[in-house]
Image (cartoon, rainbow, N blue to C red):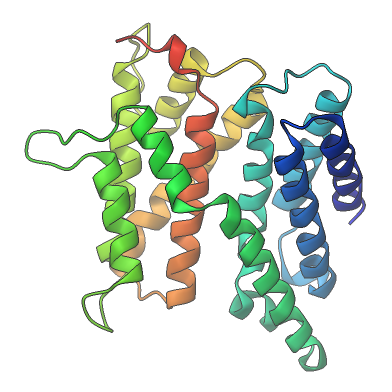
Length: 274
């Protein structure tokens, strides 16, 4: 709670400091407010708070750097820590996930808090933002016998928003999303200035970021991205073996979108090899 409140105060200062970051500063203020309400509802032993503490600690460090003038504020990478926080808070944005940890007399309050947090996170994970980035990176051209990352991304959301039948499985959406991210990583590997062996999924993300990350991207953020992709890949792949509630399905799509958004925003296209 202390970290969230400190982040909110710094976000309000960022709004006043720079017109360029005013919109993002306001978003972080809204995210802090919604997160505080959700955290307030949770019994501490019911939710793993460590990833959230790590994310909010990182956000505070980055905000301190911005306010101190040490971090350039004209680049998108200055705002990616907000995506890290949104990703860490996503499990509290599912009403069914949060109310099972609170007493019956507080469940309505918890449900409202989860819904508010969900709306705030959705503003950042908006699919058109991801599609725009995929287009900027030229990830719109289909490969021989396959679809482009941008096409797979749209397919993933189309299957969720307009399922063919009421019983359409989540795999119709989550597997295309997995292949979208896989295809993005494969394409970016080819654009590294120096080709090097990267066998594991973690190693691939680390190699891409080591060579293509923009100025101001910390090693901590790169490591976090690599770790999250390993976890997210397992989750997307396992969708074949489990039945998803629609709420859980939507949350998985949202976290995949947040990952893509943060991953692509950390990179500097000018460093890419043609």
